[in-house]
Length: 417
Ligand SMILES: Cc1cc2nc3c(=O)[nH]c(=O)nc-3n(C[C@H](O)[C@H](O)[C@H](O)COP(=O)(O)OP(=O)(O)OC[C@H]3O[C@@H](n4cnc5c(N)ncnc54)[C@H](O)[C@@H]3O)c2cc1C
Image (tube, rainbow, N blue to C red; front, side):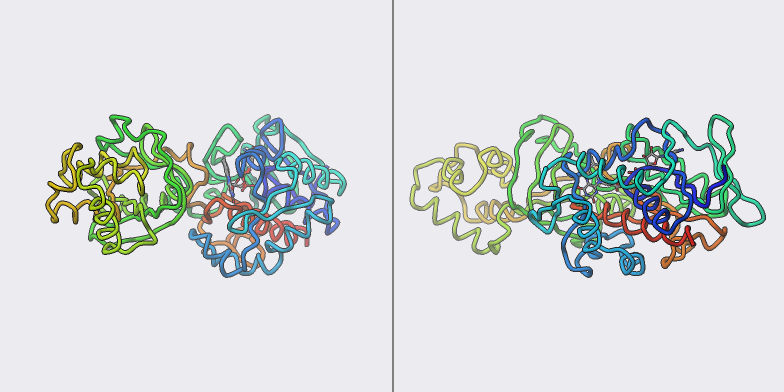
């Protein structure tokens, strides 16, 4: 059978593309190489599926630092509010959590995945799992069909490539779509890991002294080789056996990757502000006042009142103070160094975990070659791209999934025309 539209990839983008195309009465085939659809969606948002984010559109786009502005047209077709209405119309109740993150009230990603698959089936889409695509076929500058790895050829009018990035390959996203794009003349911007833990060789990391320490509501900043702060994120983080992880470390990771590339030194500084609501002067005077009250007590014990206990030894070492030092014998200059480190505790990082370990792949199909209104290739008629295969990446928190649903919907809508 010939199809109007073949969608390659049954993740967030592909499922939504199949729904949008079949709604417009196109005959649609959805192909996936795995035995299940929506595998990455099923593990996103800590297994609860952060379906979208309820922020205003401008804020939403700001949280997609990897080319979020490209999404203006597709969000005009299908935005975060439409995603919420879409699921609620299908009987999925959603709830809003911190920072606008939207989850199903069941707290189970399966609710979302099953609903999407149910809707795809209800709208008459043919689904084939365990059907890895080998390549997309082109003829005279337009799409002709796809060839499966089994050798079978399928003919269609339009192909939507929704094959995802290269991260977490066990979910099926192994970067296959980039070669099909290149075959059609597209360029692929450099791929890199984003939303990924940071690696460091600092002695307090390699000795595992701080392993497992969670810091709540601190600020983490990335500094470039010229000593300029590139970005700062506020929230929670954790020290691991290899470096830094947790929400704000992940958010900083793409800036670390870029700063590392620019610096050429093999490492960059990230810095932790342990008291982000206080000025350096306030930190100096308030900690000093605390110590003054108990001049005979070891400073390390005094500081427990305002800092995580495990952080105190590396802070004292950094300020060149002995672990047993008391207020009575701390020179003011050393206290100033200590206060400085509380505001800017430097951690030299030399990289990140791999692209496979990252939550999201940065880079992808070059957006200059894609029509933002339709998601169609500007080079090959009938070829569409959506989701993470594109050079779009956002923070976790529902932003990537929103980009995938929105571009998927737009691609499906236009591929069906
Ligand atoms: C652990 C984790 C947590 C995350 N949490 C969040 C979050 O909280 N918020 C957020 O916004 N984002 C989050 N993300 C990112 C988000 O899930 C993805 O960006 C998004 O789901 C990508 O959707 P996609 O449809 O483009 O690609 P994918 O979901 O990767 O789907 C691609 C599909 O294509 C199929 N495929 C690939 N190659 C072939 C082929 N040759 N033939 C046939 N089929 C093929 C794959 O099997 C796969 O099913 C998270 C990611 C991970 C890994």
